[in-house]
Image (cartoon, rainbow, N blue to C red; front, side, top):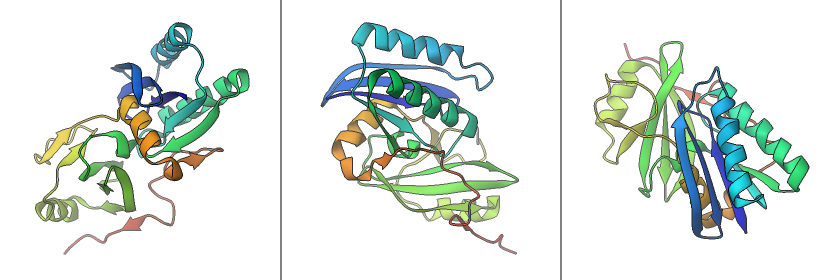
Length: 200
């Protein structure tokens, strides 16, 4: 089955297409949230050169709500013209090929998010933390830590961005974890998010 994967949740956009487990193309570019033209140009190029997909996987974040909404809208437009099925996966599950790792990011309002990926898939809740709390959490973490944000104060976190190619791979490996349409971005401040109090 031909699968198209799209992620616009960070400042680096990614599109990939695979035919079952064979990667056909993978493209990345600087993703300016104020200008989606490069994304649509890249998307049209992939569709034109490699034909329409049967399934579309959208990275749902956490990250840029605007970028993720654009990706979801584009997927819906493609679905209308191709009949492709739309599914979502957390973008953070496609940051690294490592089986187990952690992801931290800027959650605004002087807070940060911390999430775990185990066996290639996002697990547990996303925790929102103050800087002192996340420093402590990092000190207790023995697995690789990645971020897609500019957070030089957390030296243990390596800069890495979600990959469309990895989204295709995760969709093939974990079909039961695919989120069915209608899709929405992963929101960091909904009630189910765990917020840890700052340490005194």
